[in-house]
Image (cartoon, rainbow, N blue to C red):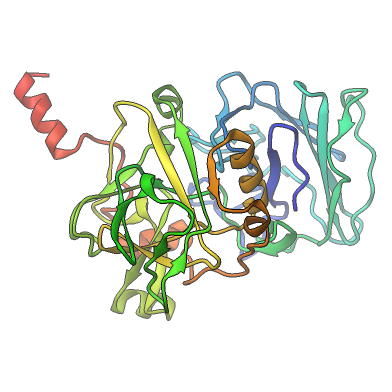
Length: 397
């Protein structure tokens, strides 16, 4: 598992050598170059974390960035520091301000290597992550805060960070090489009031408890092992609108009633098009990428629920197939944080801790793949629902 700061923050992904034909265009400006290199930081805790004063250091280049007081990251979400973001960075992205085509991070091949440091002044602690062929055990650079205490033992990966390949994490949180996916969130969730199919009939998600048998698409019903919940205030949602729920109107994906989920909760999409584009008849896509998905600014706090089964599965929600909780990169940390907050119903801590998920129930599309599947009408900005729009018009607002 990842080394984490006391606040639950950890380095979740790095793109350190963005060159060649496989280079990734992080800011979608039509140019894929060294300025698109990034460091992604994830919040593995069960509550929002302020990034005020958090520093990102490089052993080779010194201080890379200091976050200001307006920066924050919600539970399971990410903050992505990009070398240079052309235009205004969207929520969750931050620009280090290097010149276009500037070299943000050292490569990893040959004698090139680096160690990245995440320093929290609040606890005077830091984590470190080294990469290279081989990685070197570097000491913090000149100017690094004196007296800072290392959190964890220090991570390293024997990787030359090939062109356009990210250093990311596998399902167990271990470092590996993979496809760049900046801004990918963590824990995914279901909004209060959603009806979930059980062996005894539909039950509102907030009323589910460990022991309920949930209907799944593949095989016999699975026993619900744990139920967690995350509460987001209206103030937090105003500052981080990307966490506002999306609603899929009745019939959009086979649901019989409106279905409200966190934006990145994955739902099953099927048909000839995913087969044609990706060679799979059934794929998982983020709810926000579904054409016609409605994103509305909440008028109050939002509570999301998380349903843990022995294996990752497709469960029935309002008549549509969506995923259960996947214990991926931050799974163990998520369980521990939900437990510490008292936001976890479970029959047995020992039984919950034995659950591991080594793969998802269906292939998961990256956001750009999901948007290709959905077409140009997907992922629209937050707007009032038709009902709310009618109220506004009627009131003369």
